[in-house]
Image (cartoon, rainbow, N blue to C red):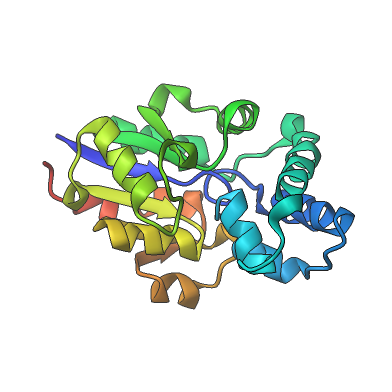
Length: 223
């Protein structure tokens, strides 16, 4: 069988969205920007440059962008040894892999951060490949990261599912022609995920695992 199960990581497999919010809030504050935490939360899932565009506007002076991104990365790195997987994240990846799916992580994380996230999930034996936003010209909500992930494993969109926790994930899946599955554990409301294109929504990896047999991960055609 040639099918691909694509997974976002932050907020989907790991309980890390709130850590990104705090890190971005402080990085922005250090550069003189007062941005409410709830607004930052709504932008989590976008690549760093797009997140700053979303929060500060595209017409701003960009001279401080590198400084803010570096501050976020430094602050977030202090949590690397304490990152936590969401309940049943590893078991979900292994169950999907054992069922014949190619499992691909689709993330903006790079290098040390990606290693820390994979260490937290602790399911490398189930992961076929990883696609990052640095591999493409545009990150989510553009379809590019998902298309790149499918190219890595040679699977067409009709035989793929993308599991994510953010509106940006569901929009990217829709634009790539891939079935989107939303999880609530990242903090995005169900209605927002459904409006963005989610075909099904579950509380977290544990509920998706428990309901795997009647989820989109059991109904897609193979390539």
